[in-house]
Length: 76
Length: 306
Image (cartoon, rainbow over all chains, first blue to last red; front, side, top):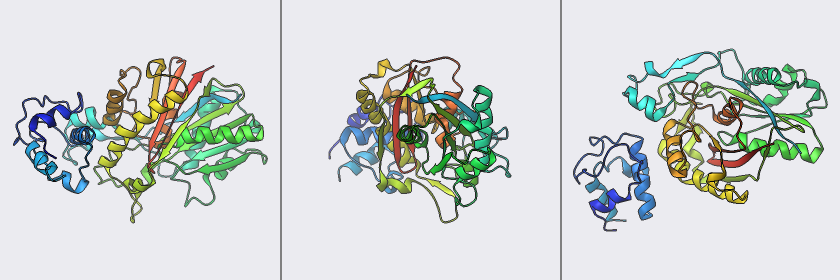
């Protein structure tokens, strides 16, 4: 599945994370951007629901940036 | 017609102060307050058994009503942390401690966070089938018995508490249609491990809560010919502040209607909903109750004020 940075950012529901994600760049660490360990679950759930995909627990820990997510989704 | 007449509550006085534990788990104060939500956890005395928590909730019920023990036709105890090893059933021990009549039927049900809602349907069905007029649904699931104090996923969440809900023929609330569900394939998400300690897959439980519970509530409301806007109050299982905030966002209701109320005592499992209902300081015509967790299991219904 081919998705863009904009696709990912627009998939995240309003209120799912407490930080402004509109300025996040592809290589920015999501943790450094202020998305904490609970909000990251909400972040991934938004993407899963939007694109009807699943990120297994064993893979999520390696997806630290939006570019990581985009690359992972290319193989879904 | 039978329904809820009154609810007795018991929250142990002892507290664990989570503010003193955040450094141990490399967390900051903002995360504790805004995300976990539980600043203090109620914890029972080491000598207190599950049946003792039930008895104390019953004493509170007696302070609120004129119920006499000899009037009780049945009691049901919802717990997965029973007295001893669970044999005999804890309800039999409560029966002894309250000196109930030989004619009083007693049994336990094994459910976690969905237990109060399931239990309401079970006890009312049992009472209606047998023409009973007075019964009590107890919830008491002291997770302090099984908490791994080193586990970041669970040890800041769960507190001890108990409730005693009087079901009678002079009710304050009647229940609407219930809607239940289970994901048995996800049962390892919350379980006791080989060391007899609680483990939880936080992400699995969060995803389940965020997806399944709003859908269940919407479907349950439709079953009762209601919409979200018809509901005056939501007493939902208090898993954590983050889960309650997420459900509020998904259901598109405000904080006054769907509050987080477990800051001072923690997630009390099947007692979380009745502790809210028992502490209400104003009346609401329609209240949604929804429990979800261990199993994974969920259930909801609506309470109508009479």
